[in-house]
Length: 361
Ligand code: FES
Image 1 (cartoon, rainbow, N blue to C red):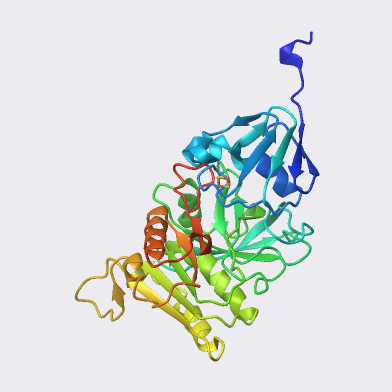
Image 2: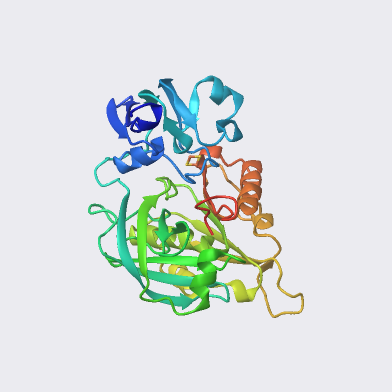
């Protein structure tokens, strides 16, 4: 007998304005997922309803909120009909207005591939480098990903995917190999398993690329600030900038607890030396918990305390921040106090895995 319970779940359509493109949104999928799968350059970062980057305007139709939009969107946004695409499932056909990232849709899609964990290497006592050999490139055209983006990684037997940033410039990774940095999380299901034994040869599924964190065009100085495994995105971004012949001054403040938590020092030193004549890259590690009587000659304290000293004129500065939310919030506050335009501050928050299904680690 057919009644309500026998009715099949529906697929709805979303008309995306101003382009007029039509998306088929499968039952159970959110609007952002459908947009990315169709190759739209839909701005997004967290995909879990916390950053607000995917916001768009609902012009017609009805959506179901997977989490409360008001958690991220303010009253003005809500009154204008703004919604979060990553937290919206369709209850009817809809019309949506969204400002997509510039660029061609060709080759911008998200894909999923299988592969194996081909190598691991400890970078510090709690950060491991993973090399994953994949069966298919994530994108056929234009490189796997943009430096600064991230992927979802799943291992069999681990309850859900985890998100990690690509840790090398796309042109430096081989076409079938991806590099990630993984920090051990106390009581973390995936990292507990990963750090417990030799997991090389394990099958893995990778999907992506995701995120809107990449180096924007510009002439002014660039300030990068990262902490812990946030090194991954900034390293990829700097390598890519070097490969492209970037002729801008860059300051990279990296926060760690002690000297034992520093890594990629040789790579940073090589980048500093090969930076383009007339411009400089300065890598500045800052230690927060280094013993007072150690041989450390560098900066101490919280990395964000040292932001104001780095430049005199901040007017044309772009900032790129990558790491845990408290560091990013403090960095944004300090940068805004220096006069950096909000639109020139780009960040990738590593949300706590315990509170977010795909939390960055
Ligand atoms: S709120 Fe949707 S991508 Fe962050």
